[in-house]
Amino acid sequence: MTGSGQGVGDELVVEELAKKLFREVASLRRFKVIGSDSPHGIYLYDRGSDEWVLASVDGEAFMPRNDGYYIVYFDNTKCSACRKYDKYWFPYVRSAAKELGNHYFVIVLCEWFARNCRSESASRTFTTFDVHASPTTYLLHVKDGEVAYKEKYEGYLTDTELSRIVGEFRVRAEKVERGEKVELPKKEEVDVVELLKKLLEAISAEAEGKK
Image (cartoon, rainbow, N blue to C red):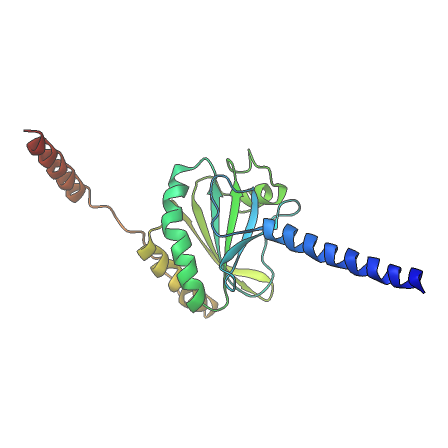
């Protein structure tokens, strides 16, 4: 009788340890922010917990099969422009994910494109989507398990650009589905003259302050 009870007790202990180990392993695959020190791989945003889940490291390239709208950010850890993009990307995703149903946010992270990557699936995804500039943002409309429409934007996007480009993507995808012509939204243009004026004003103010 004692032996039987001991066996049940051991099973319960093993089960609890297994659950604890699973929770610890799962927590290691969840991050609040992805950056230059993060493991290479493919991350999916979990809007419920406001965390990025490391969904794939080894295996095939990321190719969504569930219907919906996917916003995929191709990130390189050695890319300074990507770090600028992060300042807009993460706050935008946190805010937009609450409003945009059926939209899924993804990060594909390598060190330097497919050429230097410690994740087979991330490296293959860079190659599959033919990404040679960073950051690059892909917008995909998946219908019936296939990519029905896609857009590609090279270089970092500001918060206003993300709001306009991503926020209106569904409308453009639906137009394409109806056979209508679609004009891609343009990125914000930098007014070089205005920029030089501000730079000269700053230099002049600094010179005045040193007098």
